[in-house]
Length: 436
Ligand code: ACO
Image (tube, rainbow, N blue to C red; front, side, top):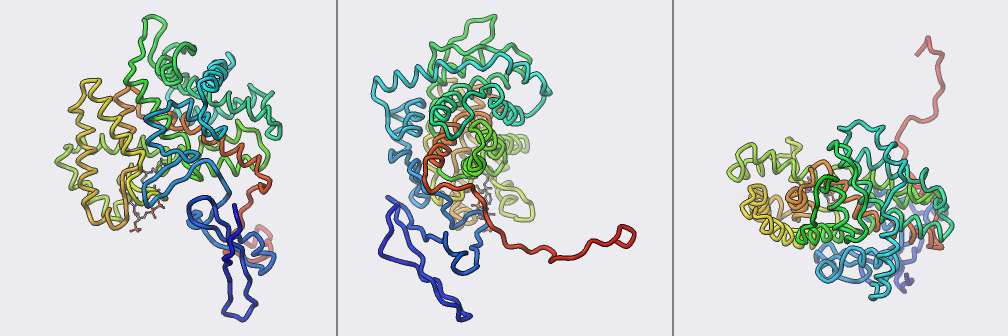
């Protein structure tokens, strides 16, 4: 971050003296006005609910140009990473800042692979949940519980603890998600099989049973790996900001990531993939493609409270580049499974076409986001709808950790503590209960 020659001047209509605020430049993207001394100098706070114009930190991990529809991890376009790298290479990139060479990759894969099992006691902890509990409820609990099972890596100020907790989280998330699934299905847990790839092992833990041989389908393995890459990080989104805020108090990495999982669950964020597939199924039940026009009219009627799930994004005001890659994967998976005529895919294409031509969506720059097609792919793989957001959490874990570790290493980092515009009652006295 470099200070520019340019400065912002804040002046007041009431005659208070104006102040100058420094402006900093990053490597690309909008400059920022440094308001840190604003309160000390003027007694004023800034007001920005939803962080519409506020950079909450300095980061070198992910860059999004929402107008161009561009997404870079450590400078590399998502399209190149999705087509030329696998998920563990992407994890290495996000965590350490560089793509590994052959030796570095083998070393990283080995260390992650060595940590795929979870403490045996965790399955007894899992049994405390109802079988019909939502997987995200279970994941919030399980990830938080890792701090109880791996107490030897909970000191966020110790670089070795941070490193080993990062590896543990990346390695164990697939095991935990698969355990949550097996528990709800009433099937025995499958232990990780370390001869398989990261995505292949996840498919094995999800769909193998002790009584039959299971062969990983390479098309599904590649599709899942791509889902993981596309969801791995997305700069300062709600769950990542939650992880940073939670971690800023000095809490342990497992607790901070559990907070991220909880935030991701919401339908405006990671829960959108589940909500999107439910929406497609509802329209299908109502009559399918023929009902798209009627549904779009309902979405446009604000009083209906209905949104086109999988559409719109705070940052992208153009096609989400991840949605394009996901649509490609969707075609590949459906054709490999002989599901080219999948009615939900046809419905999604029809919805997308109409929405992209409709003034309501055009004017508001609403385009499909990554969740619009990811649900169809996951459903084709055999993943139940209620597990979609847990898959997202699994993939985003590396981004959360990379961002958390970046924050801890930032000399400017402080506990996060927003201010407020208070609009409640001014001071008043408590009346005796009989007189209230
Ligand atoms: N369907 C219909 N209208 C929409 C949609 C949508 N999906 N998204 C935004 N709009 C409308 C809003 O009603 C608003 O209209 P107005 O200007 O007439 O009031 C306008 O577009 C701007 O939308 P905001 O809600 O102000 O945009 P914001 O940046 O706050 O919200 C969000 C972004 C939450 C993603 C929103 O677009 C949404 O709810 N989309 C559906 C849920 C979804 O797909 N979420 C996934 C996000 S990506 C991810 O987490 C991986």
